[in-house]
Image (cartoon, rainbow, N blue to C red; front, side, top):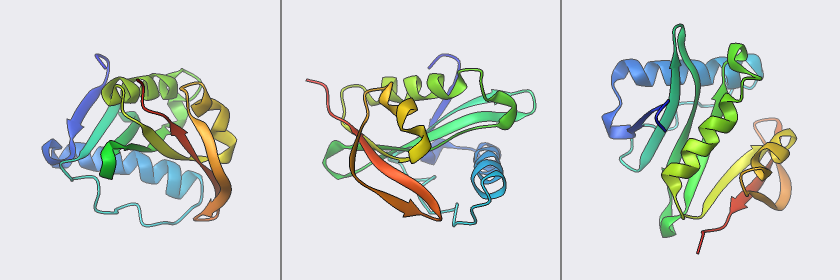
Amino acid sequence: MADFHSRKGTDLTAAELHDLLRLRVDVFVVEQECPYPEIDGKDLLSGTRHIWEQGDGGVTGCLRVLEQPGGVLRIGRVCTAASARGTGLGGRLMAAALEYAGDAECVLDAQTYAQGFYARFGFAPEGEEFDEDGIPHIRMRRPASR
């Protein structure tokens, strides 16, 4: 994670939270035309870990990892700025998230078009496709390492 910033939710500064939310709103709400409640109360929890890349013009990519009951980690809000797409940043962010997760079981809800991307990191689809805010998703899981 040497190239990334990484902080617990309780350690984020107001400016860092602002920049993370700005990118996520730019990508998910504006670009994908998906109005949804982005501010969900989970960003500042002690069990939340944010990982992001900071470029000259702001945050270029980010994700968050949430602790869930039973030791399962939920990876979510994975996004990159339009200017950073095609650079491998998304893959590097996922690698950093899995480095943080270690041997823990991980789950995520992938937009269905991105299944192949997450499969590269050991995630397999489970269950049926579902609609989340008008976008098709599928739950994917990476089992705990032994």
